[in-house]
Every structure is written in C-alpha cells, then in structure tokens.
Length: 198
Image (cartoon, rainbow, N blue to C red; front, side):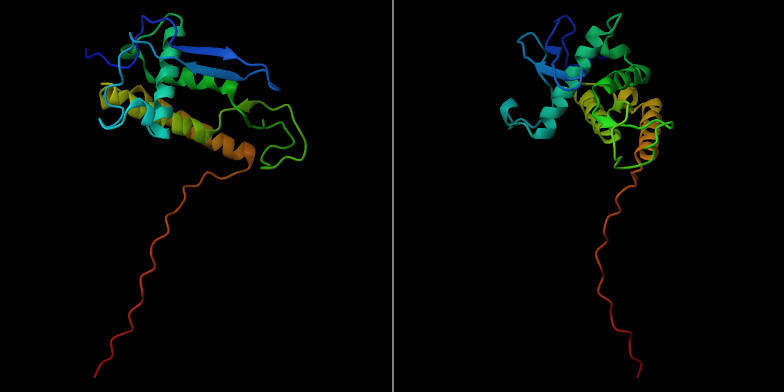
C-alpha cells in the first residue's frame, strides 16, 4: 500500500485545539505549529512559491489538512489516513458541527423556513452547508496532492456526497433560503438582419 504524505502520525500535537471563552461556549481556536520532523507538503504549490507566499486557498487547504490529521490522531483508537473511509469523514463533519455559527431551525420552531427570524430561538448552531462543501473540496484536493489515489479518496465517497446534499436540502428548508446553482450569463449574440431575397 502506498504511503500518503502529509502528516507525521508519531508527532503528538502539531495542531492544538483549545476552547476560547466567548459569548458562545463552543468557540474553537486552531493553532498550527510546524515541526522539522513533519513530512513536507509534497506538491501543494508550484516550485516557485515558498510557504510564506502561498495563496489564501493553499493556506486554508494546508490548515484543513493539518486539522483533519489532528482529528485522526485524536480519534480513539488512533486512525491512519490509509484506513480512513467516508464514514470517518462523516464523523469528522458531525464533530465540526459543534463549532458552527449558522442557526438551523428545527421543524418545531416557529421560525422554521424564515430567512430572517424576528426574535432569538433555542435552535442549534451548525456548520453552514457552503462551508462544509468548500472544506470537503479542499480536503479532497489535498488528499490527492499528498499521494492518495483518486479512487481511494475518502472525501469523494458517495456517502459524503449524499450527506452534503442532505445538509444542503435540510438547511435550505429550515432557513428558508434557496441553494440553487447560479446560472452563468451567456453572452448575447448580435442578431443578424434576415437575408433579403432579390
């Protein structure tokens, strides 16, 4: 089995998760630290980019990858990336829900289906569908950049796609918003005058 580069599973804490006191008790601070024993990112960017000049997307992808690696290390029992499946990715996404900031109304809530509720309610805060979708896209790309085979990518598993679709649909109903795909505007072609017959 090929080794997937990116995390050093023997290093106990390259990412530190800690609670920060704020208005909401579920705040999470993620601090990443680099160590010399960690495997370097193999093909995260072009050779002309140094780690300090990575794009915002590349930096976020690296942070997400490190956070997922920390999650695997803290998993009981610890889990190697090679043994990670779509079910573990779903477990990770459900774990992240506790740190969400998006109010998702339950069906019993009087504001169910209202995009701008007029008063507070006790409904739970969750990760927004768009955030989860973008996270999975970055982790899917990072997995393959670190030596994973596309057909074995747990972030592209059918169960993950179905979960994201279910989250999108339930949040759309609960929040009264539509997640329709944006249609691209097609360029308007100039109309030619009809041919005249002589």
